Length: 280
Image 1: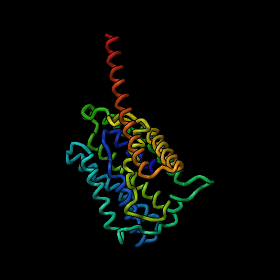
Image 2: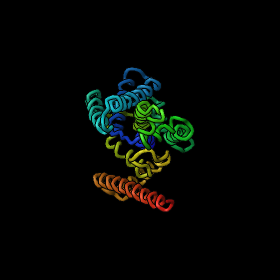
Image 3: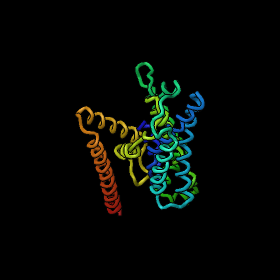
Image 4: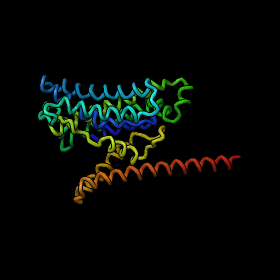
């Protein structure tokens, strides 16, 4: 789940943005899927409901940020973080977990094939699609260009607003995919799902080596970071570390990763200055 959502977060961070609503978005998507399941016992309907819910929230984030001319996506995504969580709690019957999911979703999220979790295949498929998007398609080049310098990208004729809107829609869609995986693994929908998922996905991207300054990073960063987050959490669990201290540890890891990124950018800037001086 973290890996899939982190790939969407990676695209947003590549454009110098951030999506703090992915956790609440995921929770709302599971609740909408659970409500759809209560009406229609159809795996396709429930999956589509979750994916659409995630994509719609992403579209709202992108549209308000781009066309509302907000100074930073932090503003709208922290707002939708609260709105989506509130909607999830208000829509869930009894404001609590709804048990039951179609069999196909349970197979996708919690089943195995030849001893390998099916969720691994989902991550692999999405990694392949994102690899094609970022490395082989013009749109992927546009994402890097917008993240590198929005003004330069605009002067080159790149539709900056469209690129930004699309990245947030994709990020929201990935939250919907994460909702399908989590709902399948737990065979339930809950308004409390996805708590602090935004921190895990941001940490995964930054720990993996991507830059908050945008325009630099690749798919492997998000996947490596997601694996590292999983390893850290499992290690802390095996060591019997209290869950509250685990939150502190993840926060410290984020700080260290961001500081490492700042130091790297500083050293690279110094190296460019020295190289220019030698040429002159």
